[in-house]
Length: 105
Image (cartoon, rainbow, N blue to C red):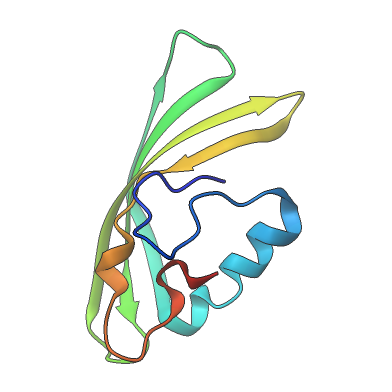
């Protein structure tokens, strides 16, 4: 899993299921996702790679504020398994006081 827009001090790359699981574990403590209402899959010239556009909506757990984020991911699959997931989301959107999720891994 890669994060090309990760700011300094945040992970730009995670290797393996354990690293991804550890990174994602605190997610529900910070974001209560309700839905992904806008999902579009774009095929590429490589049959193993797609581009996914999606919008996640919910609320920030700490403040109760609405959460509405657009994500773009470039996903490559080989032999039925994820080979690469490049996540082009804005981790700074979660930079609120007391929140350490936004990529602290």
